[in-house]
Length: 174
Length: 206
Length: 196
Image 1 (tube, rainbow over the protein chains, first blue to last red):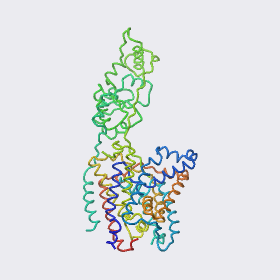
Image 2: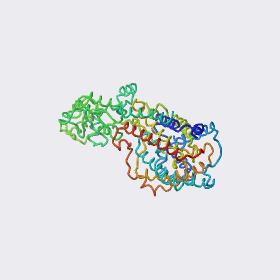
Image 3: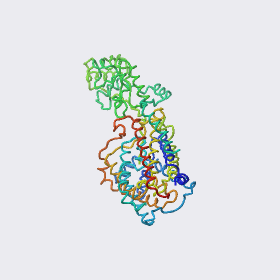
């Protein structure tokens, strides 16, 4: 089984080392770590601004955000980084022959159930990442690399809660 | 060989090294020699005694005088509102909040201008902004503000205006002669604080 | 001397190009490590696959060591690096909410984008959820504002908090990580599952 895995995916320690080097590059060039949820937020704020410009002006949250991100989403570091992730993931998937439209789910549930739970998970993750000032990559991974106390706390709570609820949610996965 | 062991063999020694060596706390110079020369040539750091006296009279809250002489000299005499940061302590961390900020206009002074200028050069090279030097130091300040010389009767009017201001300032600040009225103090040109760009921590996060 | 963008060695626009290139690296490594599979990610919580733990902690340790050595050599000024601020309660509650999202959705935002790039439709659904979640947060912001700003601790690092040097904590983190890897490999042997 182990041999089979090494052909299929990168060795996790090797992958981790490479990911660490990517993260280090981000720190060296840009002085910041990786992130993901911030790109979504940037896109959300920009879309709300197009759909309801007056709402943006009258809501403190949006106007504060716009003030701290003067260039809009096209000048946002994380937006470009996430575009890169799409390209990078595609390249890797193409090399490994994993490009395929599908819904991945446990044999015990249907695709529909999987999609619904993915959406619920997404909503919770979106909300939590804004409350916790960053997601797994932005707060936990990059935070741990710079030894930020907040990064370790966020990491502990993400994985702690997920472990605690794993038994309840086991049908979704096993 | 197991990848985990390989990883462990690489990172444990590195971890031990990093735990054993002291942290690099040296503060790098942020301006290079050319940039420094440019600033020195321009002499932007100097503030004239008149400007300082004017700000003192106006009780301008943005002015912070910093005495860079030793503590004894400071205790014997210092300008009103000045704090004491001896040149030898200019790099100590507790003084960093005073020196590395963008709110007040710090003016270093010493007896002459040399020590004050040295303090400015060190802080400037660290990339700090808003630090200035009292031109001519305390000696020149005493000469011009505390005991101003009456200009010759043939001098242009603004010389007289300056003289009146100096006398006024001198009286208001407890200088030498106390024989002039203070209301004639003209508005000296406000020193232009040229904002220099400060290197800031990168904003990031999700 | 880094970070290069702060020292104006690279311009703001070059920085965005770098973001794109770094993103490509990020996406490539995530995908080739298997982070595009939600069942592989979720496997972490059932003991049958500890890829997440291994990649995550190896990356954190490598980047941390890199930063500490770069600082030691004077290549990077750590005081200019972004350190995420610690707001104790929002970090805890936010982390817990994300944990629930993780176990139900099987992705985190970064891996969802990565999975989308190779055509996983559940990732698309997750990203749709993300957008709704972020929108909910921004619209409900006044309700959570108090929690969001509570217990602001500034930007402490964990070694300051534990009152030890960066390097000492770094070594401890390395040993903890290796200890966890050992346990994880033991668990993988104990709860084997087939590859997805």
